[in-house]
Length: 210
Length: 202
Image (cartoon, rainbow over all chains, first blue to last red; front, side, top):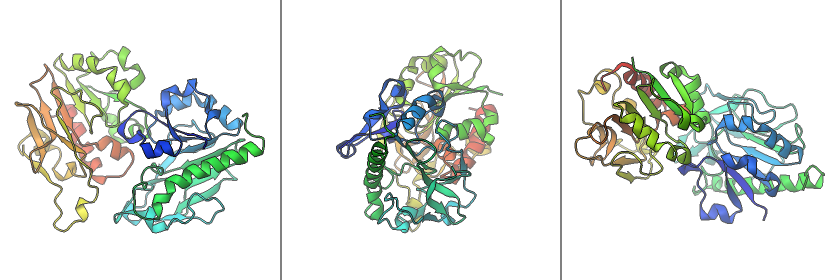
């Protein structure tokens, strides 16, 4: 099982459990980014707990990794242009209690078998999945999640670079549903599976430098 | 008017709360967390340590923050701290109940103890400070508890006794939740709390 990096600063929300580590998730301290070889990982998850200015200062590392066929799954409500072609996050004008998260038809297995209700609500409360959206996405990106107004909330971009970028305008979808007792519980594992599948696909197409 | 500096971690939540929202006008300077060690704080009256601040970089600056407070200045800390570093820090973790308001006869469990304090008399209400809690402090004797839980744990207190400065410590994390647009009360809290820091009676 290839490891997947989970990038963040050191705070309570970013700490990994034994279960996470058994799944191959490895905490990658944000400020260590310049000193690691990202190709050692099947993919890199960037959490919403990062210093974006630091990522912008080290954008070339991420660009190089993508050039080599790397897989980046960003969960940052992004406000600086540190990730290729990912636009700024915008606040949704729809009140959270009225906002419907919609799983779009797709060949991507990220949300396979997950009931929309289960990612819309946690114990009857809406808003955990996302409070925002992307105003603009790359031309060939595949949109996986929208809301009732049609704006993209999560997409996958396999065309802007040699690698794969998943960009989410939401919360930490690896952690937020991990202890739920419904179909949303599967999301964290499916996320890692998707990242590993993309890494294999990119490797097979010659994108990676490994 | 007090001059306010923020230890700025540069996360998306902090970007929106402290740099680009309506609240930016109350902040005189954002000090990037990686530069705090070298920063000169003399010009400031208040230093805010936001919630979800990087543990390691906070650790490197604890003495500097104490030195700042000990010149008679004000330190504000938001949210649960990731290690015990506040003066006479006594913290009790409690699981977060995001759903209390859905229960019949919902009670947040919060109590306003200091109804005549300037912050609550002129700037915010208890409702503006009500969303969820992550735990409580048990401050040392002489500290002023403004908001507590119904069993007496402190959610917002002022410590004038353990250093030569003033510490306003709260387990509430309005800056994080405003910056991720999740808890509407946090907007009301910051609309009152920051003007109070600027010109209120602390």
